[in-house]
Image (cartoon, rainbow, N blue to C red; front, side, top):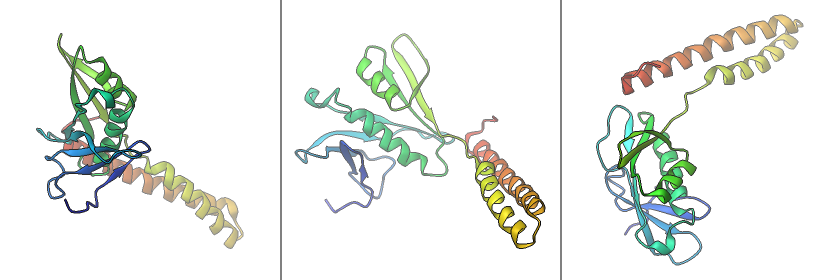
Length: 188
């Protein structure tokens, strides 16, 4: 297997795709970082992708590697990787009601129970919304103070910096909100 550029590294494990040309359908191998370099399991986004939502599944077949945090870390790493992609806003999975170890791993990884039946429970994690206004406000205050000192009027510079920051940040947040709604078909 050729060396992949898509290696996800945690403190306990690293995850490597089995096929770099199909990262969304082919499984990724889970390996322990400090130990044998053997594959201890798989994690995958294979399944139906729908309106900004991708499925995730994980399998650690050997019981000796379970209940050690490997699954939780794999779920976190893969979810973070998925959220780096602009069109992904939610990662979902299902768990059998009796599979308490998997449910605990999901909850530790940040997944939230959504709904379910008597036998199957649905969990997901949603990407946080952007907050450009706050970032631009901070930059605007700094720029405004510098502008104010240059022109000997700190209050005017601060006012201009804050005004421009609120306009820019607000417009970027609005644009991101509209984009999320267009992908997910959900108004928030």
